[in-house]
Image (tube, rainbow, N blue to C red; front, top):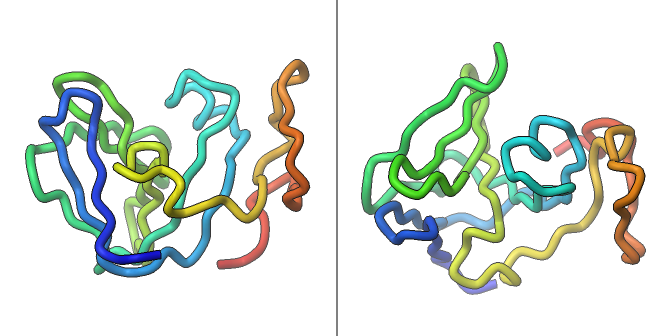
Length: 135
């Protein structure tokens, strides 16, 4: 992977840059990610906080739980990332929003206990019913 990586929203008004390598990459099946993405899964990459920056635009912020919030484009609605409210060491970018979405391939599935019954993938990646391996 060649850094930096860049990405952004559908309308192009919100852009970000990743300057440090991700510490994890997963496909999440949890209900919050399903609802946030409008899809059965959400591919994401955990990037060190110091290695992520918004370089264009101002994201809207939605507090999706008592422990986390999601940033998205206030114009087109594209969900960009999830981050813990306190003590964040990483942010979780929605990797399909990267200009090169194949740059950070997932290594496992998480929260498969919430998998929608009619959806599954044919890959051989490890699957975890909860949050998966420790990062």
